[in-house]
Amino acid sequence: MPTLRQLYHRLLDAYGPQGWWPLLDYAGTNPTKTGSITGYHCGLYDFPRTPAQRFEICIGAILTQNTAWPNVEQALRSLAGLHALSPDGIDGLDDETLRQAIRPSGYFNAKTRKLREFVRNYRHWGERVPTRRELLAVWGVGPETADSIRLYAYGQVEMVIDAYTHRILGHLGLVDAKASYDDLKATCIAGLPGDLVTYQEFHALLVEHAKRHYRRRPWIDGLFG
DNA sequence: AACCAGGACGTGA
DNA sequence: TCACGTCATGGT
Image (tube, rainbow, N blue to C red; front, side, top):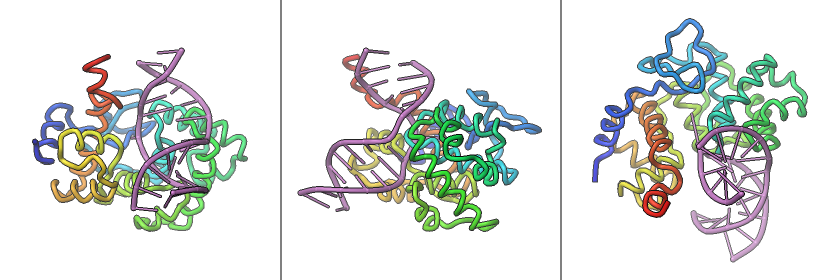
């Protein structure tokens, strides 16, 4: 059974720096990893560089709830096309327009409300970094979304856990199968260096690894598929 | 053509 | 607490 540190370095060796969070446009920068979007800022950890990028990460974190990223990207591009990838821009859209814009990302009724609720609070926070508690108090923001926003939009050292983390660490025997979100978070914090780069890369690397090898039934597919 | 995706909320044990 | 149903589109 590998340690978390070993797992992290194996993933880093295998896939290289991931440069999360993915943004629609890196105009003026040099993305080194190409994907369905412009690219990832691999090896650069001073993102977001603008308030617009910060807001885009927040919106992406909400839209990607239980949703494949290409779908989210379509919704983000749709919003950008309406000049609505900003608090004022979203407020300027009526519900029906907003709903249609984010339609490709699924759950569009719930997500329309989630975006409205988030924007209101985002305004209220102003320049201040929201606490985890403040984020969790927003309707539609749960543990993973709150931690993603803090880690990637605000550059806070906040461990992010997701379904892939559950699956991979559970499969490796590093956590119990019925471990809670907070259980996993505590385990990961205890087993890894507590710096921003490690936190940002660890989660991104797990997602990359899971996309390649940990679909929902990897061993079933492997044995019987 | 089922099956799944970078969850969160509401409800009833 | 906790297990379970619900929400919805697009890719494979």
